[in-house]
Each structure stands twice: as structure tokens, then as C-alpha cells.
Amino acid sequence: MKDSASDPTADIAREYLERENKEKQVLALLLEKFLGRKDQILVQKTEMGGTEAYVSSVTLEWFAGRVHFASGLPLFQKKYNPETHNVEIDADSIDEIQQRPLDWSRQAPLVQYLAARDNHKFPPVLVVINQPWVDNPKAAEWDSEGRAIKSTTDFIPLDKDSKVGLLNISEDDVTIYALDGQHRLMGVQGLMELIKTRKLQRYKKDKGADDSFITVNDLIEKYQVDLAYLQNLPKEKIGIEFICAVAAGETRTQAKRRVRSIFVHVNLMAAPLTKGQLTQLNEDDGFAIVARKIAVTHPLLEQRQERNPRVNWNSATVASNSTVLTTLQALQDMSERYLGQKFPHWKPLEKGLIPMRPEDEELEQGIEEFRKLFDYLANLPSYKILEHEDTPALRRFSFEKDGGEGNMLFRPVAQVALAQALGILVFKKGFSLADIFKKLRKFDQQGGFSGMEYPQSLWYGVLYDPNKKRVQVSGRDLAAKLLVYILGGIQEQMERAELRKALADARTVEDKTIGFDGEFVEPKAVGLPPILN
Image: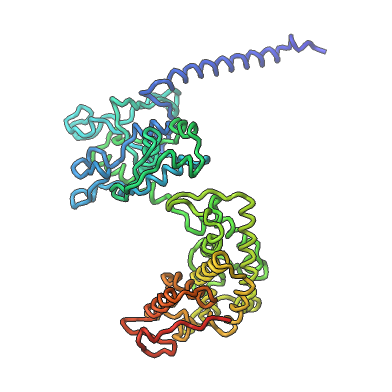
């Protein structure tokens, strides 16, 4: 055998590896030298649609301190409100607006999200680099025709193809504005203030003080936030993309239109998810997780080859001729209104916050409770009909094409109202599902859920709008209260009196109150229906 030590191939390979390691060490030293400079940042150059951009990352602390709101660009100064950081809209400024108004009520929820959630994540931000000469028409950087002879981005390439290099971000030379990421900037700035002062003022939309604060002590108490973890957040990094305020060869007007156009395109292309799509993807909201599970596993809802789909996974509404029974969004609403009575802590502590994912054991309890509810629902006479009938005929009103039963159980808003009522009865008032559904089956057999477009129906004027001849979502809470009442869950006289008045108001159209016999009556003549037994 040959001695590998004298093998020329092995020697060449070893030399190659040694040289590669030395090159890596040299590169590491060079990067360390360049990355340590505060006036330059290592970036990758990209180009799309004629616009050059430079992609990198910065610490949250740098982002909060160096980036300004786009409404503060010099061209907005005449209309700029320094209190709200918004541009006051009038006939002169309307064509200059590049940003939606900042909603300062969002700052507190964003700060709590960053501070309280371990797996928080903000998308990259898009920023504009401006230089002082841009707003000086006599500056040497403009030629005799008013075109820029250089760009506001100063890029030094480090490779022959000019794809990687250093971008000048010296505070003396450039000012940076957030083009896309205004509210992210607001949230990060609020986080820095909270860490520095241990409290943060809450604001209303227009930045009026809200008379309350977020404090570090609140975060520690409510979310078990570790102080050391909080102090380390400013070092976290966020993706950032730089574009120029003015490119070489552009006039000031052309530059302004380009930057504004980019902002509009960024927002138009980022189509928001539908509520149904959000429910499909949500891994934090316990109610969404439970709803998804039931949608794909319960016999009433699961997908089967021999029948049409029962759940609309994207839209929040159901057309009169649709063959689905409900929507994923309605199932989440049902889950929240039913299980929310048992697991109120599944809801976020404040509006606008992302809820904390429940423990797996509690999620299993929620799934079991919701499954039990659907076991009972599936045995209602109206739903048993689905074994040999499709949903459109049961959902449509009698006056619609091909007619129908006008059954509220095939309308998502009524399904949510029913779940809301049952949640109150089961988890707040101690009723059993067995007793409740014994009454509901009888009510259903007697047509209590059908013909909601007729004055004889309890749901006329409540879930059905006799004026517009369509379902009205605004009646959901009243429908839920009426269900609680007819199932024996409202005993206090005052509460009954208020419910009777609310029902009379719902049945009043253009100052005329419609009784259960279809005749006009005095509002006081509209009584409550009998309690089911």
C-alpha cells in the first residue's frame, strides 16, 4: 500500500483546506473591522423594478434611535404635526401623503407583545435614506436640469459584481425614515422607553394620553417576564431594507413619486389574511385551535367523500345557495363564546394582544367540551335532516328562489348566538347539556328555529331584518339572551323587563311594532315567549 503521507493528492487537498481556512480567518478579521464601525453597515444589494435596495439587519436599539417616521420627511414639514407624527391632510398635502395615519393606541399592545412573548417576531422594515442636499434646489448634487448627479445611498462594493458591500449610515451624512414599518417602529420605540424608564404611557389613536401606563412590574406580575430577558431585548435584531430617497438621474418630483409608489405597492401586494385563514394558522389562540380540531374530526363537520364540504374554511359568510353548514370563523366564534365561559383566561388580557397558548392538558379539556356540545347539536332534528337533505333548502328564506325553510340553525350568526347562550347556561348557571337539549329538540320539532322571516317567529326582527329582508348580525347578543331566557336561565324580574323591552324594540320598524300575529301593536303588547319545559 502507498503511504498516504506521501500521496500527492492528499497533500494538495490538505494545502487547499489550509488555504481556505486562512482565507476564512482573513475574511473574519476584515468583517470584524468593518462591522465594528458605526458609520457603515454590511449589506447585500438587490434590484427589482428598477429600484436598487440594500438588505441587512440592525439591533432594535439602533432601529428605535436612528429611524424616523416617514411623515417627518422635509417635504412634509409644512403639514407635519410633531405631536402625533402624522401629516395634517388638506388640499395642499393630500397628494403628498405616503403613509396611513399612525394609530398610537397600538403602541402598548405591540410593546407587550415584544416584552411578554418569547417567540415574538416582526417582519423586516423598509426604510428610505435621505441626505440634506435633497431639499436644497441649489445644492451641487443637482445638475442644471434639476436632476440628481448622485444617489442618497452611498454604497461601497466589496466584490467584483457589486452585490455585497458597505452602506454609509453615518448620522452626520444621512437621515433614515421608515417607509413600511411605521407601527413596528412605534412599538420598538415604546419598548426602549419602557426598559429605560420602567413605564410607558398608553395613548389613544391620536396620541392623546390614556391616563394609564404599562409598567415593568405589571409585565413581571402578569406575564412572568424575567428582568434580565427584558434588558437584553434591545440587542435583538430586525431585518431592514434601505432604498434611496433620490436616485441618480431623478428629479425631485420623480423621486417623490417613486417613493410614494413603492409604499402603495408594498401595501397592496401584502393582501391581508381572511379571518378564516387566520383561524387555520393560529397556534396561540386556544379557541381557534379547538375550532380547527372539531372542524376536521366531528362527524357533523368533517370532510367525507360521499357528501359536500360542511365547512367554509376561508370566507366568514355563507351564501344562501352554498352547501356548507358553517364557516371556520363561525366555529372559532362559537368556541370562544362557549368555552370562554369556562376558560376566560384563554382570551388576551387586553384588546389587540395576541393570546397566550393554553397548556396542552387544558386544550384537551376544551376540545372534549366542544366535541360534547357538537354531539348534542348533531342530534337536533334540523341537523338530522342533513342525512338526506342539503343545506340550501334549509337555509333559504321562503321568498328566495326555490324557497326554503328559513332555519336559523343554518346561519353562522345564529349558531354563534346559540353557543353563546349555552356557554352561559352550562358554565355560569350550572345547567346540564342533557336537560338543555331535551328542551331544544322539542322546540326544534315544533318549528322554533324555522321560518325566521315570519312575524310568528321569535327571531323576527332579532336575527331577521324585516325591512331589508335579510339576516342581521347585530341581533346576535339579543338572540343569545332570548335563548337563555326560554331555557329558564333568567329569573330576575328586572332582567326580564329589560329583555321584553329589547324584543319590542327589535320588532319595531319605522315606529310600528309588529306583534307575533303579524299585526301592529303597542310596544308593551309584545310579551316574552313561554319558557320551554
